[in-house]
Structure formats: structure tokens, C-alpha cells
Length: 268
Image 1 (cartoon, rainbow, N blue to C red):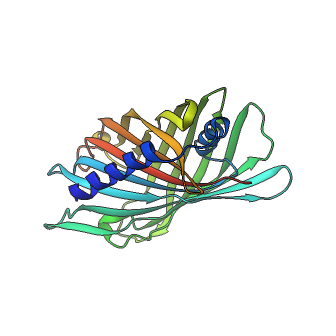
Image 2 (image 1 turned 90 degrees about the horizontal axis):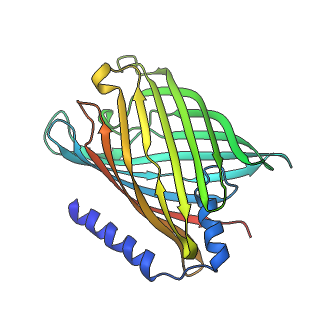
């Protein structure tokens, strides 16, 4: 598995440093659009999350989050942005020896967003968790739903905002724990010329149904990346590292490395 991580890192660095950049103004503008969660642009991010010190034996957990974003035009004044997270997981078996591979619970979110926003951009709508996990250890076994919203501003070279939801279980396997969880991601991005950017976009979670030492996961860190072209395909790639300054005592990871690549399909 570590060979896979090293290969991903090498390919990412090769893409970033050897690929053709876009025109000067266009690359910075596209980078800003790719950092906007409710931009009217189709994107397909592949987020490689490598969690170190996971579980009671301090093992390594790998999660590939595939996050397609598809916008729809509802009217001249409103857009609907469909965002979905499909996790593919490789993690230690917490019951017996070895590792488990499979799909986790799928997390779709819908944002209703103004087509012509002002200084602040925003979206609001429902978020869901579907019990699609291929193994009990990879999911919650519950159908969950709750409100989600995002608000951001894009002054100059900055893209700054927060995305948040809270979900409650409404059905599913009766013998699985009740779900009441908060997910909040703030994002602070600064964009340089030639497609380069620095970013801090940690995902903070709170499991309100857990006991006190296991409620919060609070990462802190940052990363850097670049928007570029391979042939005619526009991409955004970044590497980020986060230290979990607060983490659950039972299953929390100590720190996380992210290797992210997004396919970008701007409107022409």
C-alpha cells in the first residue's frame, strides 16, 4: 500500500511540474472557479486521503473520495448544484486480522444557489447519507438526512468560505447506532499567477452521539497545488497535510496526507 502512495505522489508532482499551463489570466480564474463548491462547472475530484495512526493499533487507512459535481440550470435566477461523495476504502479489519476493501456510505448533497449572486455566494439544500457500504465496518448502516449550506467570498486572489451540514438518521438497520453528526469544512485559498495556489481546507467533524472523548475531529494544516492542462483536459492537483489536533480516542487518526486531482470541465 505504501508503494501505491509513493506512486500517487510521484505522478502528482510530475503532472504539476511538467504539464502545460493555461493562459495567464485564464489559469487564475479557473483555479478560483475550481475552489468554489457551487460554481456552475462540472468537476470530478479524486481525493486520496491517507490517514496515519488510525485505530487502536495505529495503522494506515486509505480513502479515495470520488466527488462529482454537476450543476443544473433551474431558471435564469437559480442553479441547482448536485455534489456526491463516493468513498472507496482500504482499512484495517477491527474485528480480525488483515484489511478490508470496499465502498463506504454514499453522501449526496443538493445546493440551491442564485445564478447572479452579489459579493457573497451561497447555496442551501438537503444532504443525505445512504447505507451503501459493502462491509459493516465501512458504513453506518443508516439512512440519514439534514440541512446543508455553503457561503463564500472571492475578493481578489482569495477564495474563502465554509461548507456545513448536520445529519440525523431516519431509518436503516435497527441494531446500528443512531446518527447525529456535524461536518464542517472551511476553506481558505490564495491564488498566484501561472495556476499556483495555496490552500487550507480541513474537514471538522462532530459525532454528537458519541461520548465526550470521541466527539470531535479537528484537523489543522495546509497545502499547495496548481491548475494545468494535459492535452485539452484541464486539471487541478494539490498535496495537503493535516494534523488532527483533536481526534477520537477509539478510531481517530493522528494525521492525514491528501493527494488530490480534479478533472475540470469549464463552460465554453
